[in-house]
Image (cartoon, rainbow, N blue to C red; front, top):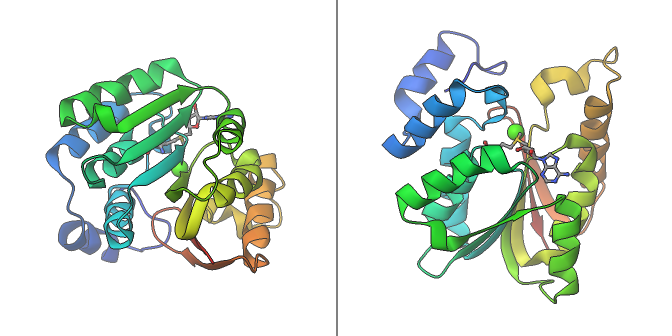
Length: 219
Ligand code: SAM
Ligand code: CA
């Protein structure tokens, strides 16, 4: 488990010992990524476990991810899909996603992942233009924070009724509640949190796990 601003010690250590079950391949990817710049962008192990559980609960087959980096959340997703399931993975970085591709191949799930290297808004718009609205079960949003509302709006169109969106970093290490923090990313996450709270098209919950994960279920 990564360092937690939500769980004080010794509870964090207890949680890590008793409640986190990370498969060996995911643990290896976490350790490889830990040597790289931007390592803190990778989702936490308990968050991967949470996403895995959600995917299995809703029987997800068609998923989209916005923000792949070295592939931790995409590998979690691809491994939770049944045979024939598909993940559309959106990112702009060919170097970090080369690591993701290596792990998808090693896990035997490369055929379930379609990586598109382009700005995610463009990829999501192309999906919608291609007639994919209403056909996805699950979306995970974890890219540039100033794009969150736009990604959410597009993913909501892509989801079927009953489909689920998970949005990462919605507590932003607590900065959302710090009035002195006026950075563009913090402002964008606050704006996103208010957007989803006011959105009557979904049921939602901001779950205080890892750095905050907002779940929104489309009516
Ligand atoms: N979910 C990943 C994981 O589990 O390791 C972490 C994703 S990281 C926080 C954010 C990623 O978003 C980076 O890999 C970055 O290249 C990508 N990104 C940034 N701007 C983007 C954009 N406009 N379109 C698509 N991806 C973008
Ligand atoms: Ca994140």
